[in-house]
Image 1 (cartoon, one colour):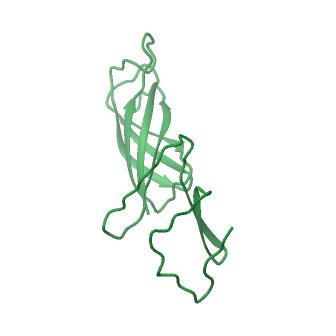
Image 2: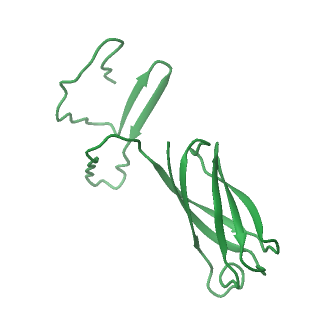
Image 3: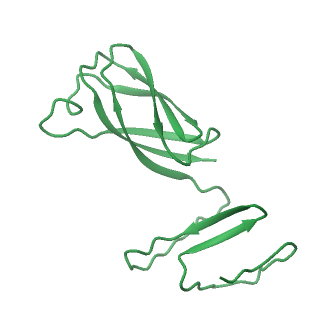
Length: 148
């Protein structure tokens, strides 16, 4: 692998660089390193355009959670989300999953509202409000977007 740069060197003249035979770019600074990878397993060309502004790259993804039947008005549960940190700004949305033909997780007489989503290192704690008396568990898919 070719290595460019070391302390005190700057390569600002690179333009239209075409990397062949690799689907990753690794940047190292002292003991820390970052790797950017592109999944080319489908064999299709990809093109990425970044916005004309500075900022950070958010992380996003999904998780599955089963909320229990609950008689209390408020409760909390934690879901494991790798890469999340306590200092992240976080947005979480829950969507129903439900399996047709079952009573569990499909039809509920109540709804759960996220009161607060708290990022911690490796997990998200969901604080929920139960609008009524849930009679069975509910199976949900959550989506999240976090930025540092």
